Length: 327
Ligand code: NAX
Image 1: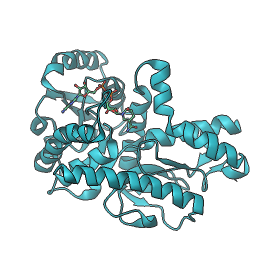
Image 2: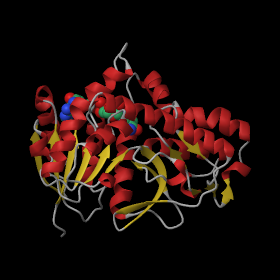
Image 3: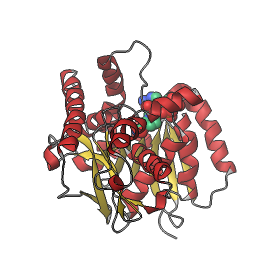
Image 4: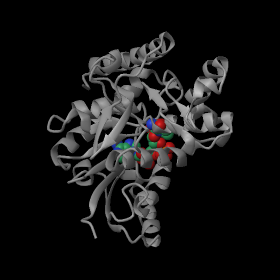
């Protein structure tokens, strides 16, 4: 049996946490031969509810779940963490300005970045799920001077999975035959779900669907799916978000399939003209726990406009958190 790894999860008593923890414990994230220690962070008032979740984890009798630690102190929850999934965040409330939202999240992600920098494993892989995910990841990263910038990533995988399923439904072909989907940019309505490289059973997707469906239906449907879920369910996406977080971490830890790639929000190195340092959704392949941006893809005028628009939004968010002294 392998040595257990430490997986920290914040916002563990929330609705995403309720789907996520059980799948990590079952081996869905790191493989069914990898024991895990869960280190769960919550705010103090939620620790009682978290205790209930821990009781349910115990009742699952998961063979791979070695230990569960709970705390309201990031220095405890992140101690020696090999993986950290930062889910807990401050949601936008009615009437809240963007500055207020970024400031409230800065109060969460700045100290969490500092704590990760001090006590996590030097190889920790960090995924930020809590919104605004890309900029929260930037805040944590910029406050973690003892860790590498590339150890901080943001989740655009739910958008990626939504795009796969929309294309599958339109073409009548299973998701398993779809390759090379990309979500560029921000996990927000400016994201660019890009079909220009995508294939369905080997055929270019754009030969199978009309351009007006692609631009007029597919892109807005994927970009606004979160709002449609809230409208239908009366609550934001939870199980699908947890599933995407599992997919993101699994691929980062165990690699991507040959001939395919996935989308991850990662620090831009300037590839494709994306301003350096932004946490931006890119197509990546992963091998040996290291991700690499897929290079050399052709960028059409349409793609350029879409990629620039989402970069502009992320630049504005970065400028706003700079002004607040958070990065
Ligand atoms: P919930 O409100 O159900 O749970 C959030 C939990 O975080 C709460 O239990 C809260 O007590 C805890 N929390 C707040 N501040 C904390 C802190 N400083 N330290 C530790 N825990 C803290 O939200 P949930 O539905 O689970 O969503 C969590 C986050 O994911 C939200 O920010 C949401 O917007 C975001 N999402 C991101 C998605 C993505 O694709 N990147 C999609 C799904 C989701 O909307």
